[in-house]
Length: 427
Image 1 (cartoon, helix red, strand yellow):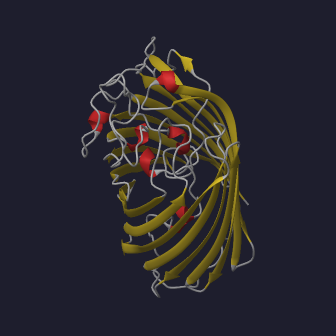
Image 2 (spheres, one colour; image 1 turned 120 degrees about the vertical axis):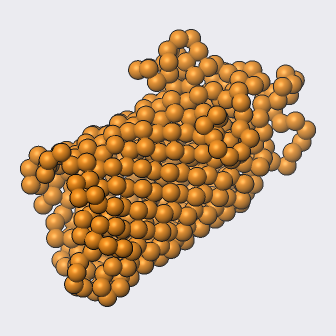
Image 3 (tube, one colour; image 1 turned 90 degrees about the vertical axis):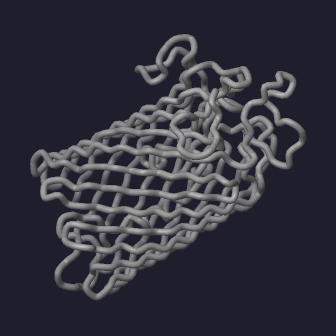
């Protein structure tokens, strides 16, 4: 998963694929012009993330393939989205069972992330929405493989915000979005545009979107100064109501990144300055009469030769008209980048490359690995206009979990815990 999550990605295109999935009765029986939402919404979220690496590493063959999971918070807990800085203060001994405890368990990244989101209707044809997020990051991230002896210490804060304006015109909807993100060593600005077109019977919706991101990288290591990265994304999708109880969706995204793509905090990290990526995503929602099944599949491929598959499964179970529990499971597997190399058995070479390859990386996120995530979300409508929600996910990553790629048999296990509390009010 982590190899497919760049340092900064516009969160705006994510909304393009978020077509309505209301079940049952997903589409109306009569066509009407789409209006702006009748009610406004304001919601507050407090999220947290902690991970731990099993085993100290430090010798060839024992380095681990843990992913940089701090990015999960910006993706609303294990979703796709923006990454955070991943160098921070190290501490040992594990935590809460995630690291397993003992001298060979090391806590890595800690993140606390409060955020606020608001949606405001502006008459029948316009709506504005936006969010503000602050990520406080601390911990440690290895400079190569998962050798904690190569970890750097830091504390950082990321501030991010986005704004989107949507115009509703009959069976057509147009939106323009802006986003901004800043941390001590990274600045990101993005703009996006999207359009949706519905059929006369409202059973089919087509969407198209374009996103442009401009990033400035100024690492504290001073390896580079004010380096630039530019990313362009285009997305196409279709949502189809097959029946009153079945909704399917397919989308395709192409992105091209140019500029500084290295991780300045990884030793000997030298990557191509261009990266093309294609993502195919399929979703199916089915209403059982009492519960809603949500199934999704994601295929990722890029010019680094990373191939990844993701399967998501969730089941929304209403225990009462006001209380719903949603257990969820995710499986992820990826192959390694073509310039990633396993740790060398030669002590005189480790952790550097063997020979003088054009490109090389010892970044664990570019290795071949697999990962599983299990979680639970609870939603409680405490009043007609107030809703509480809580979510917890447990993530585990191992080389042996992979289904594709050769992997690194000596890579250490990474465990992570993610939680979220939320309060929403409609007005």
